[in-house]
Length: 213
Image (cartoon, rainbow, N blue to C red):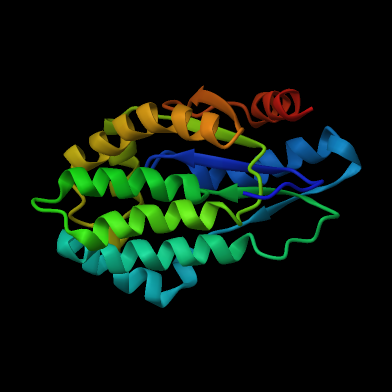
């Protein structure tokens, strides 16, 4: 992982935690705080407009054995989003490569018989992190798994149909256990905020600025 003279804040959390709806509000609040003289930009996953993402997600939802194709694709995309960033800005990203480590471990636990491809994929993510920009802070939107499940169902994405509550619950536990370890390893400040009933973007922005300055 490389260093740089700008900041990246990653918003992490479960499926349905409410990450996407926070991004613009958080951007506005951070820009109002004038962090290191640089404006904040949001780097979106833009999964809604990516037909390949949608196809692979649907394949994975319908058949968990196809997880590797989906996981490798999203990891490649997340890595590319953070390449050659304009150093005149700070950035907010919806999920970082840290998220891929968590989902990979969760899917390994779900697999009846993980094979070498699963293990190779985990170490591929760690290899990518050697050239990944430093994530200054992670905001973990800790949300009750049942609430995440209900929000996921409410948004009614066909590609997520069939995702069970027990998988959402597993992901919640994996975030709780793994994020502190990952952030410590990569020298990233971890901000944990309960998002079960949502919360205040301004308060989060102040916590981010406090953590990175």
